[in-house]
Amino acid sequence: MKSGPVHLPAAHKPFLEKCPVLSLIGGTPLVRIRLPGLEKPNVEVYAKVEYFNPGGSIKDRSVLWMLLDAIRDGCLSPDKTVLDSTSGNAGIAYSMIGKALGYKVKLVMPGNASSERKLRIRAHGTEIHYTDPLEGYDEALREVHRQAEASPEKYFFCDQYRNNNNWRAHFYTTAHEILEQTNRKVTHFVGGVGTGGTITGVGRRLKEELKSIEVVCIMPDAFPGIEGLKPLESPEDIVPEIFDPSVVDTKVKVSIEEAYDYCQKLARIGFFVGQSSGAYIKGVESVVERIDRGVVVTVFNDFGERYFSTGLWGRND
Amino acid sequence: MGVMVRIPTPLRKFTGGKAEVEVDGSSVREVFNNIDSVHKGIREKVFDEAGTIRRFINVFVNGEDVRHLQGPDTSVEPGDELSIVPAIAGGRAD
Image 1 (cartoon, rainbow over the protein chains, first blue to last red):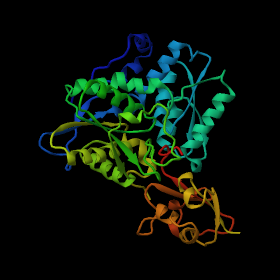
Image 2: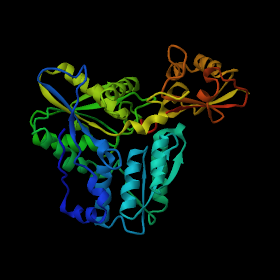
Image 3: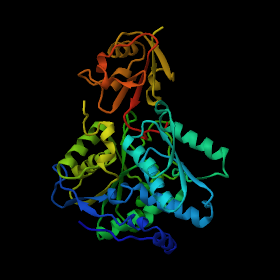
Image 4: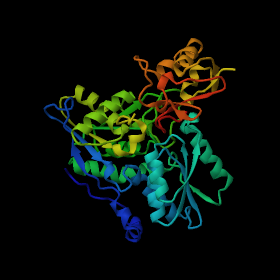
């Protein structure tokens, strides 16, 4: 296992000294994944273990950058409440980081976000506004815009779907770490689109630095969907503003059942990960099938513990 | 008066965009069989080939998860509200 160094701008350092928990964000290990179906001579598969972040997910990275930049710019003043929509992991990051920095946080979430996430968010003292689960995540997005527009003096609307510091966090930290941890030998990166931050930031940086990198994007089924990933295929699907589709070379369709199967397989070798990580490994499998040589890197976005209530690991009844 | 079925946004393509449809039936399973005769495609999104509710989908009758009742055999009455809710959020922003 290789631990990654943390690369942060000097301007972040005073905040990390004041709030030491924030220094735990980033610098996650890159670990070799050995599974039947992924084993091939001259092919190595690695995952960046993002659940090592203190908020338990990759979202800590982007939320830290978005909030620190907003404080430096004066957009987030001490009298304002941090506001955004989320299905959970970003909400935990907003709550943990926002509270550590001394801010109030309010989140708009669909009512069917997993109860593990809701409980963690509330534990940090965040206010949650729930929207009707039947109206999908779209309703949470509409509602957060309504609230931000109604009281601009009250809120700093972070807007992770439009905030360029979202993808920049991955450009300067996640991608940088991948380059260092693989000795620049990475040949394929497999990710997906939630806000588009990870794949845009990592994809842009890797394409700047390496001639022959292939970026693979996982496309989930529209219903019931894979937590945190957007299908992007139908004309009615919203494409996040910060997502740069030009970084994507290949798309791989993955169903929730396939994601589930890989979550189970990963659990059997000790990695207890959430649905999107299982979906990514299914995408990795499709890459490994067609290459004879390479270093394939993906990310484990979050922990499996966050999904007990969704039935991912079976049900009590 | 039948059972009022609330349809999540990704499945509204089967109902011509309607958020609610009124359907007859005395059990959850019967309601879905009857929906499918008018709005074909919804049943297979909710039930697997063996006739059980798919792993990542919850069906609620008057706000109660039918897994904690009698599953697809849960009785329903005219005026009841039945909701189809993905077990997870955030997959789709449509």
